Structure formats: C-alpha cells, structure tokens
Length: 153
Image (cartoon, rainbow, N blue to C red):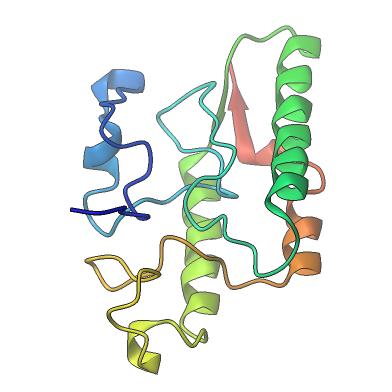
C-alpha cells in the first residue's frame, strides 16, 4: 500500500467531544485543522505537524518549535485563566480553512493547475500536505495564538 501522507493520525480511532470521530470529521474532503494544529470537537488535542503543515521553506525542526510555542501559549492561557480545556471554535476553524482553500487554488500542485496525481493531492482533489503561504506569512499567523479563536472551559 505504501506511505500515505494524507492519512494523518491513522489508524488510531480518536473520539472527541460528544462522540465525534476524527475520521468522520475528515470524511468530506480529507484531514483539516486550524493552523495545522487544532480541531473543533477535540478539546486539549494538538498536532505538531498536522494537515497542511508543509511550509514551503524552513526546517522541520524550526517549525515544530514554533508550533510547540503556540501550543504552550494556549496551555498557559488555560491554566492562568483558571480553566481546564481549550478548543478552537468552529467559526475560527472554518474561516482558516476557507482562506487556506482560496489560497491553495493558486498553487501549481492543485488539480485544476495540472497537479492531479501527485502525493500533495488527496483522493478528494485537495491538498492536505502543503500550505499555500510563504514562511513569513504563516509565521505571522502562528507567532501568537488569537485567544478569541478558542473556547475555554
């Protein structure tokens, strides 16, 4: 079968809030996350190099450090605010993915640009591996969390 880069966290069956299953959440068009790290319905669940985390420049190790800092800022905010959980809102998740999809349509590897058949494009015709933004643009997005994008409980 080979290595399948678009099957994130597979074959583990993750179950989130209210019984939502990760694979069911991703069934419509493949793996997605907010800022490549979080998903609604999965409180206190973070991925260090999740869907669309393939930044077009920079080292893997640098990005894992940047993602770790983002996650640690969220956890610190939860603790200091006296809460126990953090979860990205559905609205923030959807807004981020809408922007990602719009930018992704301009990338060479996308299906309509002739990129069909590459490992970048999943069985639904969308890229779940790389991201469309430059290193600097994405770094500005993940430099510090926007706490308004998250629900604390």
